[in-house]
Picture (tube, rainbow, N blue to C red):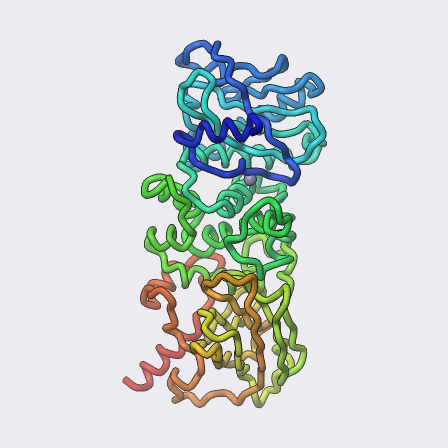
Length: 470
Ligand SMILES: [Zn+2]
């Protein structure tokens, strides 16, 4: 058992249990502070870490002690201390907590002279037996003059705060949140974009809750899921909601990793509606940073109507992963402007299927397609010819398979008559897997500056038929 594993094991009782430290970058190796047991008692103003000085080289700031190997310059250590301090000031000002015990001890950081990229944050039992604290480790190679090191400091400090808040989330939400935090601290450098492009956009079919360090794709996906934090911020409840998911687990259940749908459900949100709007927003990058983000990789394309296709193999969606098929609206003749979809997926799967119409890079309408237990469903997107872009999106709500195959068939349909009721549209506006809020509430949750303009078409059809019949 290496010292790192031992330390983590010893700290299990007090520190949040995690199998691995939370990292930024691939290939980082373990380092842990070694307690000397010769530490001065805490003073009103912290002067040392709870482990004592780890290396001959040390630079301190108000809240941090950056210990560094002899091969690391003090100016590099100073840069890290300044970046950590800057992130600390910003994040605490935004409502994130101080780091556990940092009113008594400096927060331990360390820069290795070994070759290596990335950084990680872990927690350990203090050297003098005084509880536990998080600590942050990185390598001098990352201080290469770019702004990555500054964003990394914000990312890792946020992990220290996550430890402090009990860490009651699944691994991917640790990374997704910390990657989103980079934007909160450094809004001009946008270093997180690459993580979303490579981690999410390139493989949206991977499960939302993908995690792990042995599979590079799933490892990167955790960071790419920062886009879900941006969705919560921009389309649902603001930056307070992202931080609030951590406050929630701290208060409710810090000891167990709650799934995000348990967290949001517990906070009073309809996860199914939040997820539906997330899936729709990603089709066209309906986010403030849309111009910087690479489009999601499609699982299929239709340049003509009618058309059909299969989604299988690598791009078949995993549970809460998404497969996007684009349809060219210009292929719809003016006389038949509605898009009809026949969906066929694996039977017995709890399918989420939507038709998304977008205009000007914003989601315009979303139709939920009802899929029976036989895996078959039909839907219609009225007036699809007027959209800039149209997408078919399929995502299993649950399951255990690596991917679920499905097929689609589309046709152009004449516009429905005005007096048609919602039952003939093929859409099911009330579809909910776990039960949800009334439509009005959904609209309220999603009301925000960026996306308030989009309509949930199922609701629109219902309102219209209600008016006509009443
Ligand atoms: Zn991380």
